[in-house]
Length: 173
Image 1 (tube, rainbow, N blue to C red):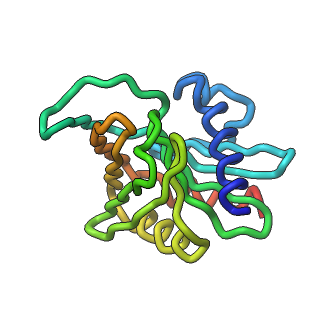
Image 2: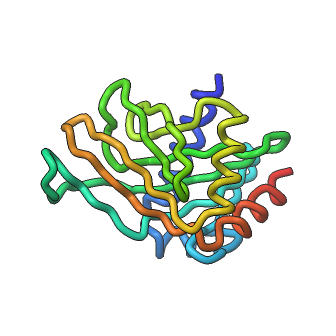
């Protein structure tokens, strides 16, 4: 059940942010911008999320840097009434089947399960641990593997994540 809910949230968030950062910030769903993070809110169903694109990406295959085409790359923290937050990541490509994505925040490492182009933690307690690390960290480095064998490393700034997640959570209580 959680997987379906998260998949739906990721689809909504991708649709909203798929317009590109500039267009998404002009959307009527934007409620705040905090550092490198933007906060969105929707009413039906009621959900709010903080989202950020990466500051840098590195794509490699067989140890060599390669040029690849990727869709939107985003890190999300979503809130719904009665929930304490869910972390998800969209890599902009289909992940290798049965692979995991590693999130490294200041040496703390978390593994996310993948399905299609999205990745999530495995439980609400894992979400809370990762959200705590994001709020305490400076950068998050997310490493994944595409279905074509490309390794991707996306670096996200965590500047503003605490204020953005506070705003998202407060709006969706």
